[in-house]
Image (tube, helix red, strand yellow):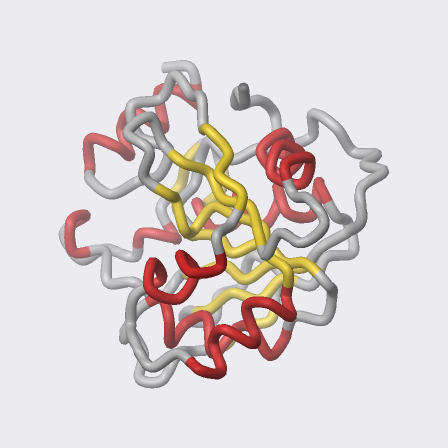
Length: 204
């Protein structure tokens, strides 16, 4: 079982490093069209928190943010074509910049993400697996919270004509890792989710 904690809970990983592609180009419709990745939780923006956790797990990770360029976090910024066209075009834009054998595919709005979550995914990954993704209490795969074999995703993406992450990644039969959390929502989709995340993280 995975539980949230401080992003610095474990600096010295013996697991192989990874790169990361963070999708930060959505329109935030359910948040009223605001710049959701730029919203602050616990003194950092949502996208900064995600990038910080990646680097706490893999200090020399190559981090690619698919979305508008920002002063922070430190990362390579690219855009999907056209901007706002969805997660599959965003992955197409980010994946060419992945250099390592494994990469994390992440949403930009994961305030509860910790190094421990990466550990759980990496521990679940077996030889022959294309990837490992979290599944929620209802058994739904969380496609933007997973670790993947870079070569497997490149091969699948080369032949894929659809627009759904489920359609792209589901046939790869990733290892499914239960996400056991006390949080009502692991990501931030609505103003209520944001308020809850701030209470959880900031202790208010």
